Image (cartoon, rainbow, N blue to C red; front, side):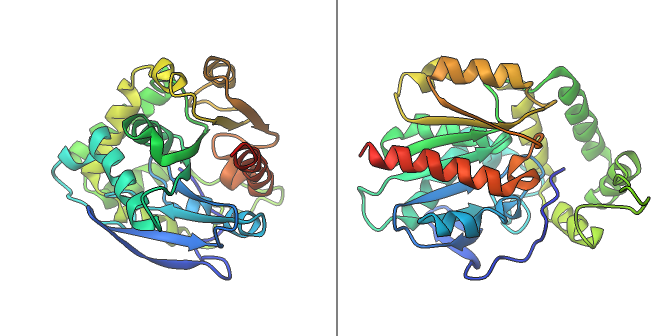
Length: 293
């Protein structure tokens, strides 16, 4: 589970509900599109706050960044007992609707960033309407299904969601995943108050989590389809990852002819582990794309 440094938007950022043709989505919107605009999609059990430390440095680099809670994630509502709105095709359509709401005109194109499960949704949106995009960045998001060990974890969660409510599942997760201790033996949860993380968890739709978990375990390899688009792609990850092993991400980058960044000192969530370095890598990649016209 991702642990943002804070849930408070940075100075100059706006938290609001983005109205689209497919409903409203909770977003954090920062910066001005001096060079371009990027839409940021969080991963499984995550939220828009997973990108919160990227907004200021990317605004300083000339980019508007809009991080979004997908349907059924945290502050964007969705049905709790119907998985139909959470199929990959439906989520991809949501992304395209979000772009439509952000665009100043029909010719606007966007940089798209997807972390982990958000990368699978981002890829589906790009494959559906590639002309809407300037580039795609896959952050710790691999070519197909997640590793066998993570599939087991997801199965445990899906089984728990079938027999427990969200509050009960949260307590079970906390029992299995105690926050680590720092050098002085004090608990470090990544936030001053675990209640904030609990509130985010309870905001998720169980149907969304179940559907997303199934997709993570069943995603086919669509790298050839993405490579055929010849869209600029950036594969960014930490230096270790147990969801998609780093050598698998290296190979995917080669197959895509993609730019590759490994963020030292980061694991599955470089956007929260090393946000400054992650922002530098994103801005440098987007600058190259923009320079190419």
